[in-house]
Length: 100
Image 1 (cartoon, rainbow, N blue to C red):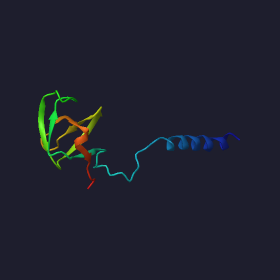
Image 2: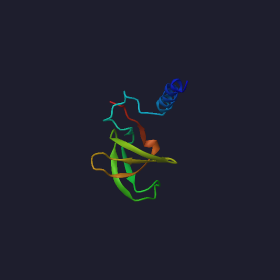
Image 3: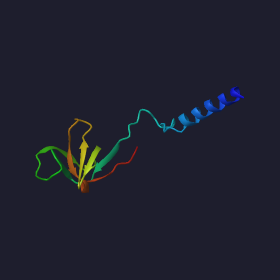
Image 4: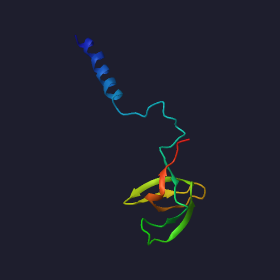
């Protein structure tokens, strides 16, 4: 009888490990889980912090696409991919960018 119970133990261990969350194999590894935003305003100041009183560290023009890092209140922390500048912009001047 003891030999018959061993496969059951192995089976239950395999079931437990199979239940652990894993990345779906269909997800492309080269593509990071990034959110992109398109600028809707004519010209948009990029600020050092999430406030209109913060210093301006950069400037964006309409239809530029930026990487969304964080959101706080009415502000979004973004990264400008070309020059690597990070800063804050008002949410109302951003819209979801197309994923193509």
